[in-house]
Length: 119
Image 1 (cartoon, one colour):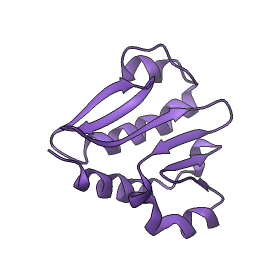
Image 2 (cartoon, one colour):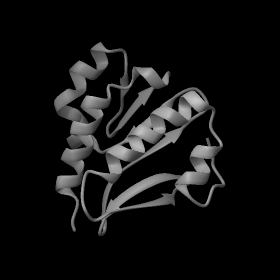
Image 3 (tube, rainbow, N blue to C red):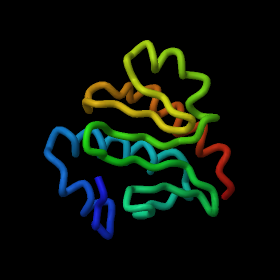
Image 4 (cartoon, rainbow, N blue to C red):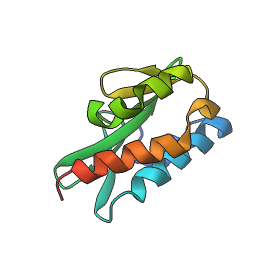
């Protein structure tokens, strides 16, 4: 989805309640991963940085949701995620229904990415 929202709050407000609920949970995971994490709309999607280092981003596409973290964060869980029916790209995790995302694994992957970001 190409969003014209200026803030993440505006972005989330455009979504149906079930989608907003899971993406709000992902937002919370990003916000609590690092004391210096900043939130903004970059590339027309919610994006999280620590200093100059990208922690990740998420988006709602036409037919799926995306969680962008980088290959290093996804690789240790790739087989497990694929077994759950999730589509793993090089640094992106895609899921069709909000309830498909395992939030516990998402939290681990986000934390791993935040540790590598430069403060």
